Length: 179
Image 1 (spheres, rainbow, N blue to C red):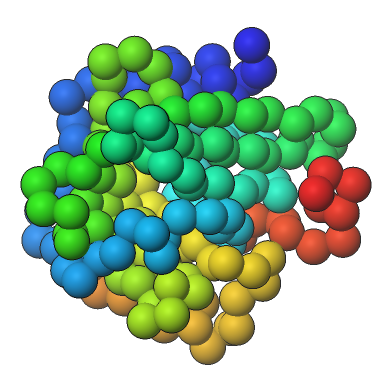
Image 2 (cartoon, rainbow, N blue to C red):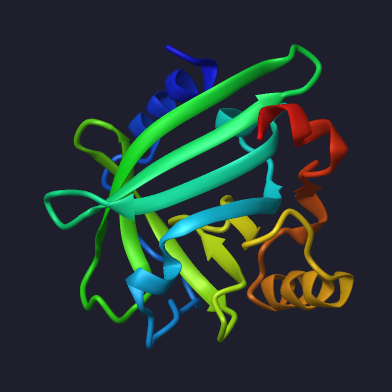
């Protein structure tokens, strides 16, 4: 079992029953799951134990036979040269045209996965967990235009996320052997 799988499972224990939405935020409406499926690159995140030390992080979303979403998260500890993979599942919380899901990487324990901002072309997303300790900036490509990145950070700051703690994720040349 990989380090990411174990730590995501342990994090799931702490988030059990926390499929919520951070106070004062709203998930996007007009959400279309089919357009959201596929690979996303993690551009930045708030630090948390289950991704500590990982770069080259991607998330792949595909349909499950039960109507849910299969989630495959991959990351690389570049210093150790080790890849970590975690597989989870996600389901809508409420209406399927709202970007609000619950995700589990460990049994019956779920955490909120809330799309707070989404590009019209589904090229980038701002995603929060159940509270302001979890935030990700995702992109369909390994690089995001700086103006777009700054705008997403500003949007997160306006929603009272601690953006000074954002970690920019390496997605460049160092990731090539892992792709």
